[in-house]
Structure formats: structure tokens, C-alpha cells
Image (cartoon, rainbow, N blue to C red; front, side, top):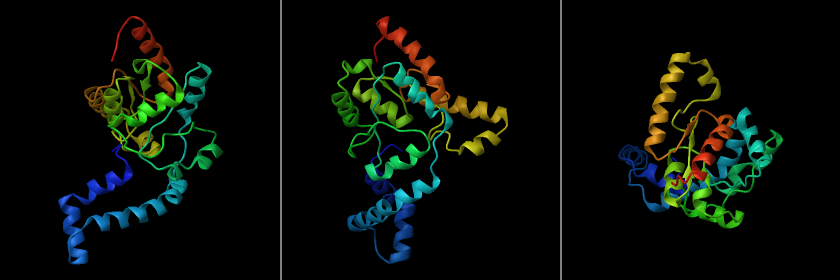
Amino acid sequence: MGLRKFDHLTALCALPEVQSAWTAAHQRGLDPADVGALYARFEALQPSILLDHSHVLPWTAAVAHFRSMGLRIGSTTGYTRPMLIPSSSSRQGYSPMPASPHGSAAPFPWMAYLNALRLQVYPLDAWVKIGDTPDMEEGRNAGMVRRLLVGGNGVGMTEAAWSALPVLDQVQRKEAVAAQLLAAGAHMVAETLADTPAALAILEERYRAGEKP
């Protein structure tokens, strides 16, 4: 998770079980040209698939609160620009700022650096990186203050499936994911984006007291 999508597909194609299945289906091994052809099909299909199966979570409105605080917001992603379906998210009331161009995604720091350059925010330890495990590695590699929210690929459930879980199961899953995220380098863990304004206030106090990444 978190890789540039071509690199993600390349990693999947390197799995022994995928190699075996490919050989069984095509009577030959999987080569780099095959990976390129598969990615071209994936890239063409993905925008329409995302459009049909994506929705903005209610707590994404916290981004508006960040902006009211005077914070500058940038994004990093392993998706290409057409895959980000900005028209769909805008129709659902969420209009994100432009993401970094497709490039070396997490855990590499390059897109984080490009955001810093474009937004003109310095020093890097004044930044907060919000995301899942690969994002924490990216934030650490970029020298950024970092924290993380539960609800990404560590949980791996739809909102409806999560809501249907018994409370005890939810607590146990959140504790397991929080431990994973802290081990990845998060300074703080918040349950959802709606909880991040309070977390940001705590990080601000720590930063002003001299705490660095």
C-alpha cells in the first residue's frame, strides 16, 4: 500500500502465486511487457471504477476546519491525476487542493518535498503528515512532524461493515491498528479525520515546547 500504482502492480506480478497462475493461463512466464500491458488496462478502467464505488466520508468536512485555522494543505498519492476523480468529490461537497503529480510515492519523501516547495511552508518539521502506515514512513523520511488516523488500509473495511461490528470488535481492531501505526512512526493516532483538530492542537503545543520529529 502507498506505492505508485505501476510499482504496486509490478510487486503483485512478482508474487509466486501470481507468476504460477500466469504461467498456467498463458503457457509462458510473465515478462515486463506483460506488466506494462496490464497497467495500461488498469489505468484505463480505474477512473470509471472509482467513480462508481467512491464516496466522501462525512468527517472529511474537517478539511474546511483546517483551512479556517489558516493551515495550508497539500496531498500526496500513488494515483494518477485522472484517477483522483475531482468532479465526483466536488459533487459530494469536498473539493481537495491539487495533489502532487504522479511520481515516486510513499515511503519516498519526494512528493512531500514538492508540496513544501509549492506551498512555501518551512521548516519541514512544522508540517503534519496525515495518512496510513506508508504515509508515516514518508513523513519520517521527509523529516516532518507526523500523526496518523485509524480508518485506512489497516482496518480494511467499508463504513457500513465497520458500523455493523460489535463495539468490542471495533475496540480490539482499533487498538491493533493504533499499535501498528505508532510502530510505523506516528506521533499521535486519531480515530477519524474529525478528531484531528484536537490532535493538531496538542502537536502545536509540543512543537512550541521544542519537540521535534
